[in-house]
Length: 106
Image 1: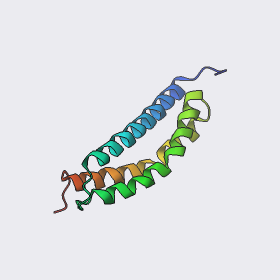
Image 2: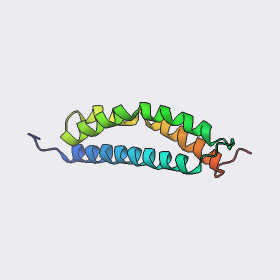
Image 3: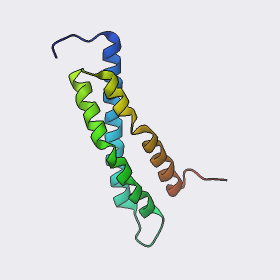
Image 4: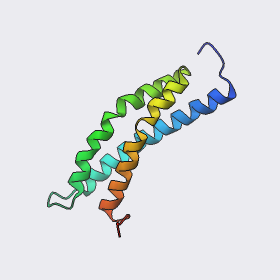
């Protein structure tokens, strides 16, 4: 890195790196959870498992955001790329909680 980052840039960089780390850890947790708890007799977990493919579609954007933030360049673009996966991740959280039984529609 040729230039020193301002305080705002350092905060943005830290935020992007934290968001991407959280996304990656969530993908690992979700994949392991599905492999350990999926029942082939039809408990609905296979439907959640099929939707994990959509989360992996956004993984290249997350990797690119991580690389840009790590270099400290184009931090606004890195933040926008990191934001791309948030709506899908929120949708997967709610779907997983509904299947597990934490969230119930009344």
